[in-house]
Length: 451
Image (cartoon, rainbow, N blue to C red; front, top):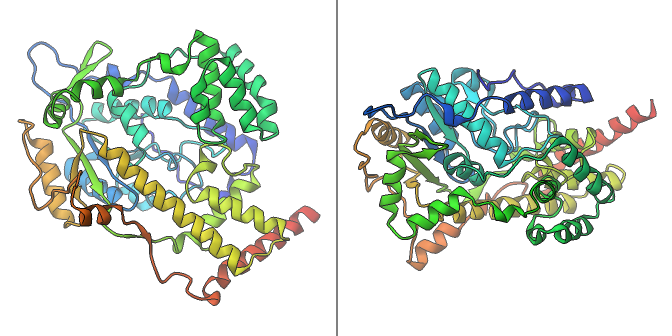
């Protein structure tokens, strides 16, 4: 079964509860499929066959999507999106979602599978991503997992904690206990409630991450233990390889590893792409009718609030929703100063996110770092050869290699540089179209309410 969903319609078409329900049903049906560990790629007898999965990651703008697309054409591959925002219908611009023509050219999975009112987690991706991998392998194609959501990839590769699932009764009880806190936006009191219930780690959650807070309380009520009592597979693996070398870690994964008593051959090429440009181009994202502001307006129109769930915490969407709410409070008006303040927040959030991604992947020992500024054909040829290599010893050529850890001060400064592109909105007139769109949008909304 394919995870490719029908084309995403314009946001205006997703206005009723029935639409949200249909996406919820689709995703829950996906939950019921068999886990990846049953995939027909286990080793029987003396067979040496390996089923191979390619993972391509890296920070925003590194060219992951284009590389994966071209790689699919060379290897008869299908793409599994490991992006926490691309799963949502209607959130296209801010997530740099593949175009419909690209999705028709190459089969994509886990894109447009949910309504933005739903939460999605690393645990969900673990199940969906592995099921999609199984389906692709059974079709004789090559799974190519691409995206920059580090936790999704970590759980997909190493596995997820074996935490018992809450019964419907416990889920309902937890929902009831936290509902009043959430209704009154009293996050601190809710955290204190869960802390007293037995999980002090709730205090380290990002503000208003209600999904994970509910999950923590569900685990406590189900098992009597906090989530920290359950070992995380990645941590066990990292403890093992800390005593050895990164080379051994790569060799371990290239040979395969055990999952639920089934020998699963996973990975031949972990490729990490570093963003070589030193700017973020956000100008096109902020346009009116076809930009992130329009998509943020739709999220507000369907009753969502910024930072209230997975979709509305996404970088760009949270800032755009907060900006539009401020405009609404001002009667649908915005000054140039307000607009530039929004741009500044957007740029800052994007820059910090890119730096967090780099820090995350520097701590991952299994990725091969490749210079994203090199010609695409060179990168494609290397990964193509790595895919067909049976020795597991194919090294990244010096011309493609990117340093993961550096000591030179100049190199460190260069790696940390991640600036907004200059030259955008350099005058008041340059943002007039956006300001006019905000004013017109508010007026149209008022007219609809008046009717």
